[in-house]
Image 1: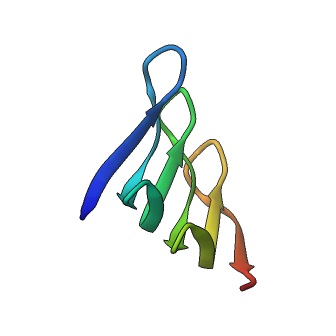
Image 2 (image 1 turned 90 degrees about the vertical axis):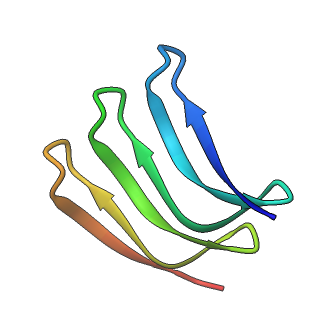
Length: 70
């Protein structure tokens, strides 16, 4: 069963959110800085990073796009 999963920084702010199936990351995930701006986003397939991953600068603009290898 797919369930939403969240991780938090020590200060309680959201660090990451995405989905997991039986404890394995799957689907779209996002990571955030402590100030709430998006840091990185991308997809997992059976626990492995897959496809396009985007890294954002501190203002939220796209900084880098990476293609994950299988």
